[in-house]
Structures are given as structure tokens and as C-alpha cells.
Length: 174
Image (cartoon, rainbow, N blue to C red):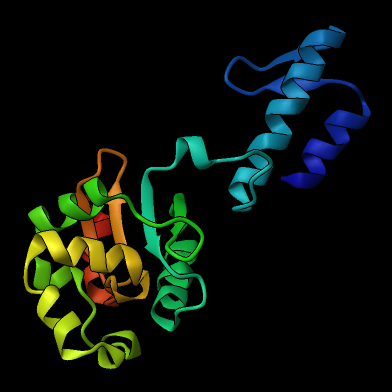
């Protein structure tokens, strides 16, 4: 297919397959060439433009987390378009954290398995039991937020953590 496109481009003609037309007008050829190149890159899972404004999913987490790497790999292999929100570079807002706790519950949003949790004092762990103080604690210690949290563009949580079976089931629905 690529050779066919290259041959057509070299002859400065583009075949519109739906109507079997040969177009030789320069502006139309240029437009068709751009569309053809774009389609080739999309079909090869390469992007020529910033897709952040078109992202269907937003994945929240920390770039170097091993669970995040598994999620990134899975989503990339599945061809899912997403936008990444790095907790280390931008602290989640109180409103965002409140939305997650409303949807999931505080016990799901807080990562109690990580080293950050284990290093907390008993007083800080007690603060994590109340939503009001927990949100402040999560903003101060973003590594305590469960990773990844994946939402749709409207902010509805789609997935939490990484489990391949759960991801497969969720991606079939979308």
C-alpha cells in the first residue's frame, strides 16, 4: 500500500478510490497528499500532531512508577489515545481529589501499599481517615494517591490501578 501511495505521489496524481477519479489539480493533489500521509501515520500508530486536545482518556499518576509503566504499555499497545497528568509535575486540585473520593471512596484513592504511606507518622495516617484532612495530605504527598487513576474527558473514573483483565473489559465498553 505504501509503494502504491509513493508511486501516485511521484506522478502527482491521487486516485480517489471511492469514485475512481484521477485528480491532477495542484491544490487538490496537495490536500490529498496531506490526507494520505496523515492516514499512513495514523495506521502505523504514529502521530504527527498534538493529540492532547483530542484525548479520550486522562491517566493520572507518576511517570516512573512500575504500575504506571504497565498501564502505559498496555494502552499504547491497544492504540488508546490518552493524556498523561503527572502528580509530580502538577499537584491535583482539591476539587479533583474530592471528585475521586466521591466516586471511589477514600480507601481506594489512598495508596496504602506504597513506601510513602509506610513512612507517615501515626498522626498523619489518622489525618487520612477524614476526607477534608486527607485531601490536604494527598496534595502534600501526591505519591500517596493510587496509581494510575484513569478518567474519561468528563472526569468519570474509568479504571484504578492496573489489571490486564479489567483493562480489556473496560476498553471493550469504550
